[in-house]
Image 1 (cartoon, rainbow, N blue to C red):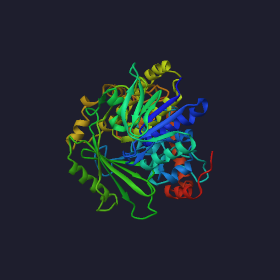
Image 2 (image 1 turned 30 degrees about the horizontal axis):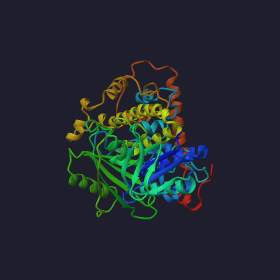
Image 3 (image 1 turned 90 degrees about the vertical axis):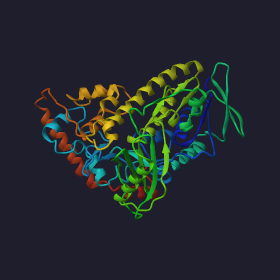
Amino acid sequence: MLRRIVIVGGGSAGWMTAGLIAAEHRAAGGLQVTLIESPDVPAIGVGEGTWPSMRDTLHRIGVSESDFFRECDASFKQGSRFNRWIDGGDNDYYFHPFVLPQGYGEVNLPAQWQARHPQIPFADLVSFQPHLCTQGRAPKQAQTPEYAAVANYGYHLDAGKFGLFLRKHCLEKLGVHYVPDHVVGINSHQNGDIASLQTQKHGALEGDLFIDCTGMQSLLLGQHYGIPLIPQQHVLYNDSALAVQIPYPADEHPIASQTSSTAQSAGWIWDIGLPTRRGIGHVYASGYISDDQAEAELRAYIVQTGGPQDIPQPRKLTFDPGYREKFWHRNCVAIGLSAGFIEPLEASALAIVEMSAAMLSDDLPATREAMDIVARRFNEAFTYRWERVIDFLKLHYVLSKRRDTPYWRDNTDPAQTPERLRELLTLWQHRAPSRSDFYRIEEVFPSASYQYILYGMGFRSNFSRASKPQEAGMADGYFQEAAGLTRKMLGALPDNRTLINHIKRHGLQKI
């Protein structure tokens, strides 16, 4: 029977996985969850964005949302705004909000938008959320309970503080056994399973299942088992980032309601608003731009967006874009950066951690025999999910009309586009992305997200099939519904900082 789970590595991935498993299995049958974390390895800790799924994850772990805001320097995220991705112009922008379009699935909204309102950005017509973001509004009111939403939302957070917050909760509330130590060796059974991890001070720690959360070094799955990384730099070129934290010019400066992504000559700049600062970073392809040039673009952006001339020296991060050939081998499963990493566009990294930890917890094998079955299912699911992430991120590039640098010219080359995405783009020349294109129960991105990107970036479908006579009226009703909700919510919702200040002082009502 599975009795001992050993997680190697802390940070968001390690502690989130420990929390989900401990919260849902510890009381049921004496399962012991141990987490080994090197005391000398700092978390990567650049600004992080989450999806709305994080609300469910934190609730499953048993975390108070009020405490989360107080301790993680968290703010609300309602989607992403993309600047200069379409043609590189100063007025070039579109939104990918977290709410579904009004009437999504009930009527062909893209066809009616394109035929009758093409001068209005697609997301602005079919959703109220871009308008909330533009006005800096919060997604709920002070009286809305924890984790409940008026408008769908995720979070921006301080990744370093988040890992510490999860660790505290796991140790104080969930009974996770914590071993701050270095792993100096891996001991194997005769059949090739990991038997124990040799630590510097605590000797050999035995386990039945080992979870690799050691980051990009992938100590167990990558180094010990030699499971290779499937490289993706031929599809998504970015392999470097420069990250910096910028203070606000005043304590009560507005907090952005969305992640902003602004395209550059060979990459893009993220801009995340936390209550105490902005987290800003330049993700770029080292084959197209030097580090010095990338830093110059970053500094120019900061000044252009109201930041100071003098900033701290940015932290340099490098990564090999790709994912493991498999994620679960024998009695070892990798979660987080040890499983793979693709550039942080659309904040998929933490979302994949959530999905991995949730599937592991939901399907936790009772015996070693069952583990091989669960492992096959896990590997198949996450190979599919990584491929969907790559398709979705590449979509942002292939639709661009920018041809001003070699980076953009190469990114829009159909030869560098995955075949599965090319096929979808062929279908979408004559119809909108639909649920039939993404048929799994737990898709990474719904077809609505593809619609937001596709039509936000100026793609036009040739809707050759005649629409039903009543569709125009139905669509108008949904467009009016979105406009009405916009007026109602702008009049009723506070701004981000006002609500966050309220949460810090008074908290939110528990569910």
